[in-house]
View 1: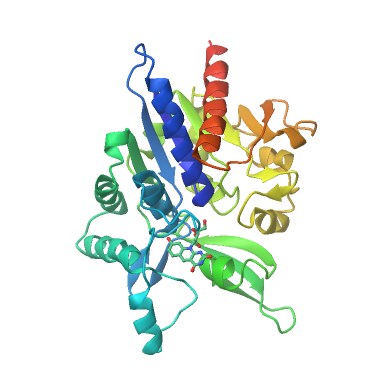
View 2 (view 1 turned 120 degrees about the horizontal axis):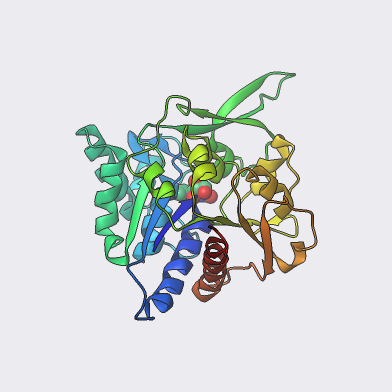
Amino acid sequence: MQITALSGGVGGARFLRGLLRALDTHRASPTDDEVTVTVIGNTGDDITLFGLRVCPDLDSVLYTLGGGVDEDQGWGRDGDTRAVMEELAALGVQPQWFGLGDRDLGTHVARSLWLGQGATLSEVTARLAARWGLPEQGVRLLPVTDAPIETHVVVDDGDGDGERAVHFQEWWVRLGAAVEARRFTVAGLQSAVPAPGVLEAIRAADVVLLPPSNPVVSIGIVLGVPGVRDALRGTRAPVVGVSPLIGGRPVRGHADACLAPLGVEVSAAGVAGLYADFLDGWLVDEADVGAAYPSSTTVRGLDLLMRDVDGAARIARAALDLGLELAGDRP
Ligand code: FO1
């Protein structure tokens, strides 16, 4: 069975860890064929700092599935130290608002070195995935595109009706998404093409899953790479998503601050409406079952809080089961 999942940051990585836990129990059944999971990771969060290319959403997947993530943060390395950042601060090097740990910097040095030697982001990501044992888990991690893209947030520039764009990470981390976003733009998106294997992974999938990642700045960016959304519309595989909102509030992060500028209702139904042209199944929290959803989408309610890996496995299992159920209904 081939599963393809789009993924963003922390929520997506934790969902995927639950999916692998669920598949392990699933694989226990002798009749099961080989299960592969292809993750299409968001790269709009990427930022170049101190001359190094940082890919937060790809790294959250690598570290979480590889067992090396800082569990409280959901990003960065477990037990990491900040000696390099402390020295940079002593040297007056900016910015200091994006905390890079010493071990995490190892990833960024290697990635930047290999990119500088001409490797593509896909090739670099495959080397990092090998270091984290993803192939042994039947997992392939693909950046949505090898082209450098960056999400920027247009905000009021504070003196009258002007506006300015800040890098997504500055808005998300330094500003805490507390400054109203007027709109999002993605530098490099129009000329980006899907990375090798991305469209094939969508077309060949038995089920496509959308974890509870941010629908605007994570899933939305993946969908914005030319060709991806059409592939999702055209795939024979059922596309099943998990709502990132419970009772109108994001489980983590700032999805509410991202949906408002789009004029989208901050609810499980509002997000389903964003995906309506390709979404076949939608898992929502029991609190949200009664809302109005696109008629083309099969909605199921359950407790959507991923409190731990077992909780994530329960939700991932439910998403996979709904996908297989919908696949069974297909000619
Ligand atoms: N998030 C923060 O809130 N504060 C940080 O200092 C920070 C540093 C950081 C470093 C590396 C990395 O891969 C992620 C980091 N993040 C930090 C999280 C990051 O903003 C988010 O993971 C995604 O970009 C949004 O999903």
